[in-house]
Every structure is written in C-alpha cells, then in structure tokens.
Amino acid sequence: MPKNESQTPPVMAMGNEWSIRKRRPVRRKNIAPLLKRLEADLELDLNVDGAFLEMAEYGPWTVVFVDRVPLVVEVPSENDERFVFLTLRGFLSHLDALKWVEVDHGAIPFLMNGADCMVAGVHGAETSVVEGDLVWIRDMTHKRPLALGWALSDAETLVENTKGKGIKTVHWVGDDLWEME
Image 1 (tube, rainbow, N blue to C red):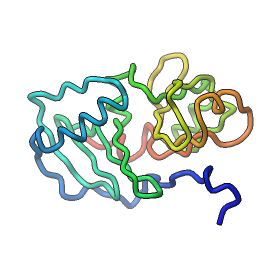
Image 2 (cartoon, rainbow, N blue to C red):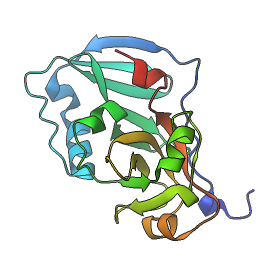
Image 3 (cartoon, one colour):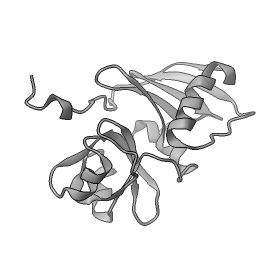
C-alpha cells in the first residue's frame, strides 16, 4: 500500500494500441444526460442542436463525435468513476471553460510529446480545480489547449509549488485522439 494513498493519481492514460470500435450514430436525447453533466461541470453551452452525433469506444474511453469531430470523452478514473470532459478539439471552441491550468512556454514542447506536467511550469489555475480532477492545460499567452490530465493537487498548490509533478497527462496535441477525423 502506498505511503500516502490520497495522492495516488488516477492512471488511465491513452494507449497507443487503442482503436475506435463500435462507432454508431446516436440521438441527442440518448446522450443528453452526459452532455448536461459536462455543460454543468465546465459552465459552458455545447449547442449541438442539429449536429450529426456519433458515439464510439476508444480503449476504455467513450468518445462522442459531433459532425465527425471527436469533441467529448468519458474517461474512467483509477477507481472506475467516470469523468465527462471535452477533448482538446472541443476546448478549441470553448476557451472559457472551467477546470484549466496555465503553463509557460517552457512546458509546451514537453506536453506536446505526452509528458506529465511539472508544477514548475504552472503559472495559473482556475480556482475550482481540486486534487483528482480531470483538467485541461493551456498556454498562458494564447489560452490554447495543450493537454488533458489528472490534477495531482489543488489549484493553489499547483501554482505555489516549484518541484514535482502537477498533472498526469492523458491526452495531448498531436496524439492519436487529436489526429482523429
């Protein structure tokens, strides 16, 4: 058993061997609860009325495609709790969504290669971020999404600490999900 089990992060990271399976059209009413939960958690309006909606399995994740673009993922945590979140392509259209962490330019090349986010690169975090949350990482200048990951501590600690890992990355710009069309 780990020394401090409360700090053991969820570890569901994207696998290279994952592929899209069981992709099928879906009606909005069938995924409305999932979308409403996402809209409430991130305080945004997805506005998918009239869009062509599909669902698929991607490893242990569930992906929702809106007009053939993967915009929403349902990701299980280590204890099998399901988190609904936007993909990075989804955040491109919703840059004002909650649950963000900002990093400096020095962190960007590492994040683009799928590395975990170290707290030394974190310069800001939205106040509702708590340990164990799924968060999106953005660059501090342009506010563009770079990666998704599990927060290993709360917003204040992520910003104040100068050593150690802050976010366990699960999806990043340039990975298989990003490249999917």
